[in-house]
Length: 195
Image (cartoon, rainbow, N blue to C red; front, side, top):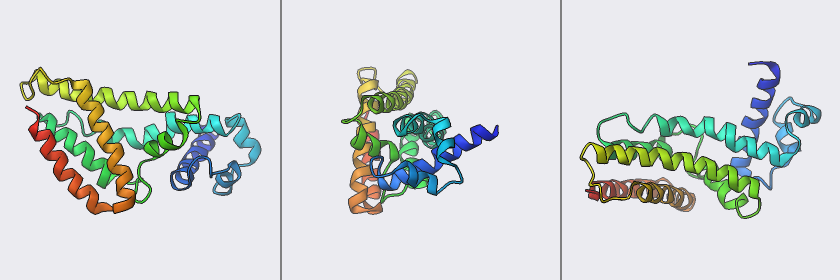
């Protein structure tokens, strides 16, 4: 990695940490720079403005931070239900970056920025669509192996699972980890009820 790439990566990593805890609108470029050894000139070399940095945060930093847990859970065992459950469990309990108190950075940005900024909406939707397609492929694999009837709409189930994740992440901010535990118990029952 070149020095310029390392600088860009450091800016995005530090920005993600701050924005995750404070929100995008509440985090200034100066706040981000205060956590790095990067000058304002170097910031503007990499990003023309805060919005461009925010889009890069979604497309690069968040993707690198969250996607491996999704990808490493799906298609790892023959049982599609176990894989989807494992993905949810990893995202809620075992992810090294995300906390119960602050939820999920993608969910937070969807709530904060999607209604206000078209570029954010497009980038977040692209990221969400990738996740939806991965879950849908896992469900279709379950259908192809006879674990799930073909009458089920894999896309709708995938969207339902993502919606559940968004909801539990937000409710966890209020009710803490015990909410995740009860959610996962019900989520397992939901997966097992699909036949």
